[in-house]
Length: 98
Image (cartoon, rainbow, N blue to C red; front, top):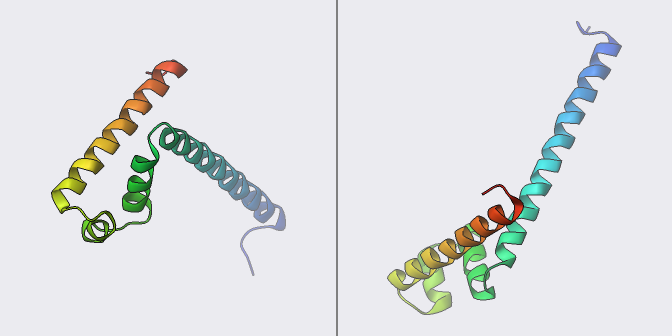
């Protein structure tokens, strides 16, 4: 038998459910913020970053897609990330958090 009463189990389940709901809300906020930042950069930057950072493509795989050498891709990724950071800074200033 269980050492917890039915009421204790129900309370623990409710607390866990509250944590899960809170985590889901936080994930939604993060997802919206990322979408907003990616929306602030060009489509080319957005696609490149999504392929590399979200889809997890390697530089070798990206070389085949973009038909440029690894160094050129590194530069493109760096610049795309810098533009996202710039958009993040601008969003922070606009929201009063920067």
